[in-house]
Length: 380
Image (cartoon, rainbow, N blue to C red):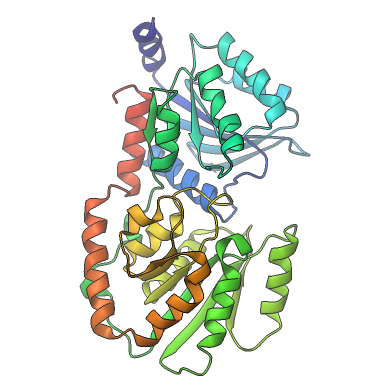
């Protein structure tokens, strides 16, 4: 039966893919990990195959809107989940990729998948890894109790390990990093003043308090240029309070970034920031609020930044450094010691090590998109 279904799905002249989500989890013009992941994946897919059409389908939108990004990619904003299922039913989709749905809507989606399992392949992308065992069991039990007939894409190896126990069609699909993020050692000169940077959401879970304390401690050291590029969410009260403090002080160079301002120019600015950065600060306290393999970790590596980070999730296995990875409780003390004594030889040595890791990893956008297409086509 499986081979018959696959032939039926792949025999259509045009392939249609829907990425399905609750409104707000990601958006084409939003800045964040899931946003960048799916924007890059979608754009690379249609770049590789002009016969593919992609709809990003969001529900619980106050207005029904259709936004055309290019000839092959659209965002569809709909109201109720029932309205959304009707759209998917009539849309002649070959593949539907679920990301995040309200728990109350998942039973309806199970029934919808059962009704259309002979004509549509259903897939799922798992971005987040709950640290609580109970939350993890609840989240991942879906794949055991009502398995998808397609592929479960796991953005980290620890998610893959969990889901592989209950689903044999799970594969690792780490965040895609565009080629223009990668720099060569010769293209990144050692600067006279060392640039220390934090870039990311103003969120205590991302270690922004530790970053602020660290940068304030470096205030009188003129060997360094210290900058914070921060994205804040107005509804996040803890983040908003820190954003307001940063906006009204003169100890730290602070550059706020609007979360809903994505453009190619913003992407270019991020590349420029990382290329000019010598030391990148990423002291996560937990990964629960971000893509479980953080995009910024891979982007900073592609840009040959020395990364000072924390021992959470798969980060130690990705960055592979005992010298620059700390426990969060020790971050400020250990990072301050490293920064205060670092010299150009140490920076160059770390860039050479990271460059070797980059060449071993398969994270480039074109490779990730091809792996996705191979998986939904059941070639892997």
